[in-house]
Amino acid sequence: MRKILFVCHGNICRSPMAEFILKKMVRTAGLEEEFEIASAGTSDEELGNPVYPMARQELAKHGIGCPGKTARRITPEDYNHYDLIIGMDAADLKNMRQVYCGDPDGKLSLLLDHTPESDTKHHGRDVVDPWYTRKFNVAWEDIHAGCEAIFEKVTADITSTEENIS
Image (tube, rainbow, N blue to C red; front, side, top):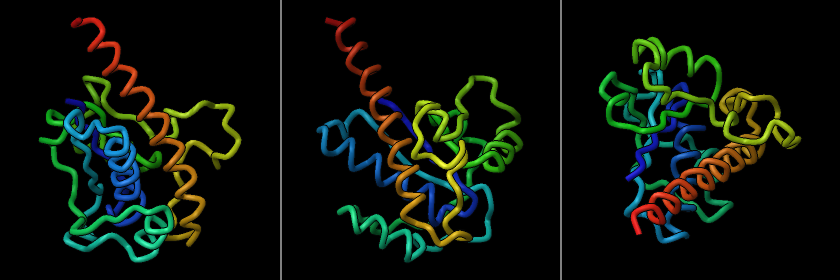
């Protein structure tokens, strides 16, 4: 089972969008049993709050719901539990390294680091926070592209592992 944690600042916009986008990809492929996907924030200012309404609306435009999701903060224990811990921007990565006392197992990355450098639809290597820009459609494009890249890589890993077992 692959365990993936998406991380952003407050866990009410970008990281839950990534969580539910990837969950839909996994469900559509019939691979739900192969994955555990979650999200968290680096700050505690939104603890217990639901996904931000404009983020929910953007997900809904694409047929994705996020019922019951509330913000939580990353914990040191997350590092041992998850295989991949994926931040949305450089500040998230810095904060994750502080909470996790570095990255000794190489589990931390930025979402858009999983996409090709030449992919011109991205607006830098950070997923810009739509809380400030109000451009939830731009965040969607980047997050969806990052999730597609992760999905392709991880499902290829699953397929090659299954072939090696047979």
